[in-house]
Amino acid sequence: MELQVRLRQIFFFSFFLLTVLEHSYSARILTISKPDRHDVAASARWLVSQNIWGVLSTLSIEHQGAPFGNVVSFSDGLPGKGNGIPFFYLTSLDPTTRNALKDARASFTVSESPIGTCKRDPMDPTCSKLTLTGKLLQLDEGSEEEEVAKKALFTKHPEMMDWPKGHDFRVFKLEIINIFLINWYGGAKSISVDEYLRSKSIDQSRFLFMT
Image (tube, rainbow, N blue to C red; front, side, top):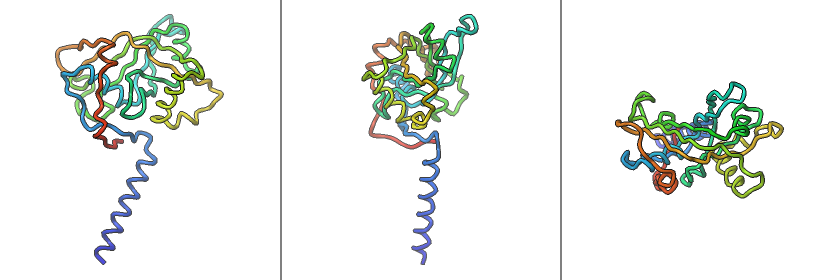
């Protein structure tokens, strides 16, 4: 009798857990630990690979070139296989897309705070933050790069596949020119684009689910 009660409890707990994961828009696979703070290139790559949204800033054509920041979803690749280049799925109905098509200069910012590994104020230097500056470029429709980007985006954001076709969604990437990282006291860390792209930040043997 006691065994039956125990099994029933396990069943209901498992059902509850699966239900939560199934209906949670933010449930995703994350690495357990972040890189050593002294490995600044790996730290930057980790921030990009583990985040699913950030603030994309362009130069507004409607406000005389004033900076225009917009919260956007993104992906740099399949879980554990990111290449460090942020991909975006943007509609031409949004000012960000129109701005980029007029002037490609842009920056993209992510923080450690949404990942859940930083319990301090987001502005605290020990709570890592990264800004990538470069050019926001539309990928050629039907190209191999666009297909890779779509797979990366739709894997992390499956809802995108159901977004209205008539809203003219297009695939963009950020061509990185400059990297600004703060992950500890002492100011911004120096990272070249080459160092960033060559870095391997993901321990693919250690994963957990976070919501």
